[in-house]
Length: 168
Ligand code: FEO
Image 1: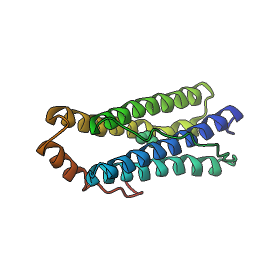
Image 2: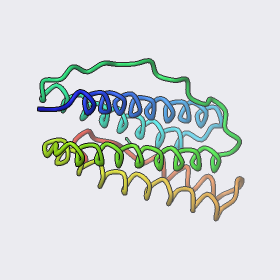
Image 3: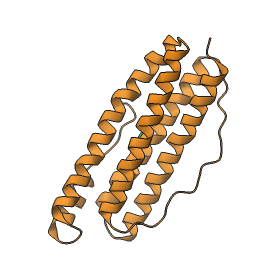
Image 4: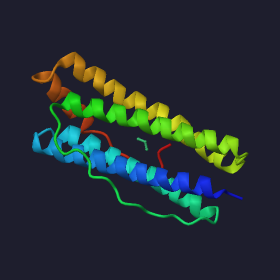
């Protein structure tokens, strides 16, 4: 039996994951505007991954016989100072999401909700990867600075990212 409190917390998490998708789509739009289509691609693929995260929570609630309640999604930032600024904001956001997943785990532990605990382990591992991948890009951008060939090389590299929903 999943508690009302746990259902509400997971519904909040669905909203946060969809908001994450919105943030990255907005960043993708900004990168397109800067003619950095590789970075725009990376953000677009990241948005798809966030949608997949939301759907994992959606499916989990449904499987446990609870209703998904979708809430309004906040408007994301639309302007960023530099590519580094956008990726630093992405990293900060991922840290926030990690905290949120940890809070869900704490609640599941407190409530002896073993099924939710087991489900959340995937997200605990995923957040390590999420922070690591964004952090690596932030480090690269810091190394090359905001202009020149380095940016174009990173742009090209990020243009190769593709997300498949079956990725773990
Ligand atoms: Fe769904 Fe990037 O965490």
